[in-house]
Image 1: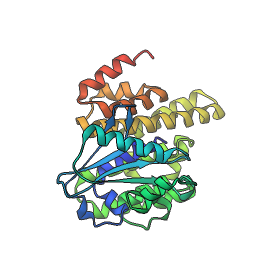
Image 2: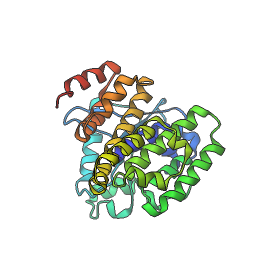
Image 3: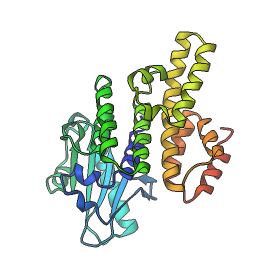
Image 4: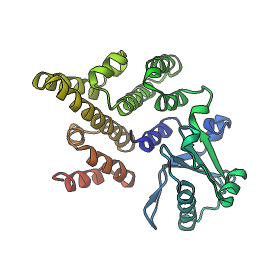
Amino acid sequence: MHTDTIFYQIFLTFHTLLFELLGQPTENANGYHFTSVEVKAKSFRFDGIFMPDTLDKPIYFVEVQFQNKADFYWELCSEINIYLNQYKPIQDWRAVALFPKRSFDVETLTPYQQELITSGRIIRIYLDELPPGSIGMGLIELIISKESQAPELVKNLMERTRKEIVDSGVRQGIIDLLETVLVSKFSKLSRQEIEAMFLLSDIKQTRVYQEGRQEGRQEGRQEGRQEGRQEGRQEGRQEGEAILLMRLLSKRFGKLSDRYIENINNLTIPQLEDLGEALLDFVNITDLDHWLTSNKNQ
């Protein structure tokens, strides 16, 4: 699962979520703009930055780390120092490191790294130790959950979405995001297995999911059960990546035309991953046109 991109979309959807993770009042999110910024020296890119609109609030750098990485804090500090030198912000700053659990954190810290953590300059959050909270927190719980826990989590999230979210557009956006998490997280399962696990009419009615079911039925008739299952797992991952990228692109540039949807659905998994990195630099929809043209025959 492309976890950093998933979290980017979650923070875009739930603007107050970072401050809930930090144990702060959600009102503290007022005046912050969430974005992704590249620092040019070595093309470092933060998973996300919460930029304040006043000088008395700190900048929050957010990094999602879902694998063991001994150099994580060295790289994080390097990115921050290069950013500070390049953009020269006046505000103070904090860095938030999100780990699925403690075992993914760096085991041995240098005195310098320990000082940054002890002072609160770097804040570590272990997602599996968080108490229940908002719908956004529930999505994080789903991301780090085991397969056996997922059906009940999905049921609760859907019930809360129907009860707590009045705006139909926001509600559909949450459902779309939930669909993206499901397809991405359970990429090893076939569409039929996912369908059996999540009997939710809201998800089944989405266009991409319906198209995926139709493709799965056609391929299942043409190929043997074992081969179809193997391809279904591969296509599940490809579908999940495509769904996420289309959500992100739609969020930035508005509803995508059928031409864009068709082109993105035809991309390979490596191409989808490359597009996930490239889209963060897109200024307008023309950049997507240029990228699709240059990667068409690769």
